[in-house]
Amino acid sequence: MSFTDWLFSDLERPESAHSRGDTSQHPWWRVMCLTGVDYFSTLGYQSGIAFLAAGVLSPVATLVLVLVTLFAALPVYKRVAAASPYGQGSIAMLEKLFPGWSGKAFVLVLLGFATTDFVITMTLSAADAAAHFVHNPYTPHALRNQMAVTLFLLAILGAIFLKGFKDAINIAVILVGIYLTLNLIVSVVCFFHVLQEPRLLLDWRRAVFTQHGSLLSIIGLSCLLFPRLALGLSGFETGVAVMPLIEAEDLDVRIRNTRRLLATAAIIMSVFLMATSIITTLLIPVAYFKEGERANGRAMAYLAHHYLGNGFGAVYDVSTILILAFAGASAMAGLLNLIPRYLPGFGMAPEWARASRPLVLVFMTIAFTVTHLFHANVDAQGGAYATGVLVLITSASCAVTLIARNLLSRVLLGLVSLIFIYTTLVNIYERPEGLKISCMFIFAMVFMSLVSRAFRSTELRITGVELDAEAQALLAESPNQTIRLMAWNPRDAHGKDREQIKAKLCELHGLSDEAAIYFIEVERGDTSEFTECLCLQGYREGTNRVLHARSATVANSIAALLIYLKRTTGCIPHVYFHWTEVNPVINVIRFIFLGEGDTAPLTHEVLRRAIKDPAERPSVHVS
Image (spheres, rainbow, N blue to C red):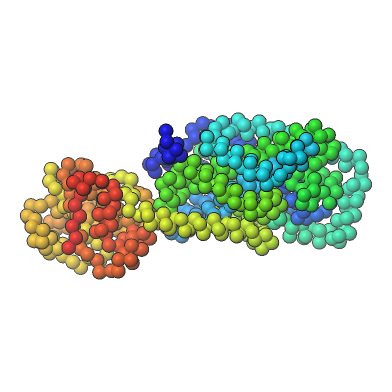
């Protein structure tokens, strides 16, 4: 097998790509572990980032995060699960709410933010895993290079996906079980030390009120600081995306089990977020959180080493490195599921974007670049990560608000949407690097989408041809005859006489009165759609036989009909057009974005690409 064959070995055609999927299903708690490698792994760095953002207010600000998680994000995603039982998520919901090009534009923008979320998940997780490795006391001094270790971990991740990644859920269950158990042990031991030294709580309380005054100001400031901690909300979109893997007898049971998954994951995470924020704030000196210090990016690992010894701490480091590495794998799997689901089907990505390995190479190149830009620093990437997470949650909350059925639900969900809109805007204002990265992804996607749409516009985009009973009856009147189609614009030709046009056609091309002439009229449909099935209706207008269709693109539809007629009749059909009086450049733009233009040459080009042998190709005439 050549390198090219290996690289594109899993490339599938559009008709099979949508039907393909992982048919294996698992109990909801096992699937929760698959989302947990992304969600729970943030415990490795969340408490450190929270302290850097909020200082001694970290536990109070984390409490705000927990309340938002349980009473805002969780209700929103329970509704998202009900609205997208096949794991489409909030992006697909907004696409349905805004059909046409506006929906496609929404998808492109959200894909940019989702790509930011997943790419930063890979780079941040690898950087934090590298931090745990570099600061482990058993690590040789020669290997303590944060950048090199981060790039090495990313390279391993890419190599795994190039080879093929299987059995993810079984690995996830083991990693999540071990990791949560170790965090529970560290938390219990640390709380025991806090109880043994009551002065720690008194010192913390004194510091909080000394620095921030009254209880009201403490609560208010914690609410204002909450956006800086928002990366602790990362597990919900992934939880919905894995719905098809949940074992269930029907969709209602799957939705119920998904809601159980989301609630259980949110409760577990909330308990650990509160516990880790309290013990890290009370037990770790402030100076140790600074960049390059022993607790930076690894606060819980520091406590594990300090209170349970370097042996246990090393085990904790290994567990953290593995789950963070697997979080990167979860993010890569999310990208490989998300991009092929939308862009190639929109005509906004080359056909090779359906293959996994080329996409892996693209995303690994991006991950390496982002790692260099952020110097493999965990804290520096927190804003970008939070931006991607928050935009997706905000889009989900807005989507469920728009589809809510009663006024009370809309009001309550609208308030939730305002919370997330505020949080997103504050995060972008304070840490604009996330928006900058997302804008680069969005610009790249829009540019590549337009280029791809232009190059793929003359593909045979019709997946099938279906005729109603009348259309079948009309075509049956000309058995074993050469079918001749006359293109008829249903909008511009209302005032024209079909008989007169047909007489001119017969005279110009020397056709007899018995020629099997049919008028084909294609009404423009949703021009943002790239592929569709062509449905034809037949009717008579006087003595004329008319085939009518509604389609996103006129030229591709006529070409598909010609190919269908050649296959069913065994004769090469002909189609006749009139030249248009429009600038050719404008015609090309109209064709790409509006599905119409100078139809004759475009129909010929579609046929030329679809049928290589000119002798077997339907004939196109222009006069």
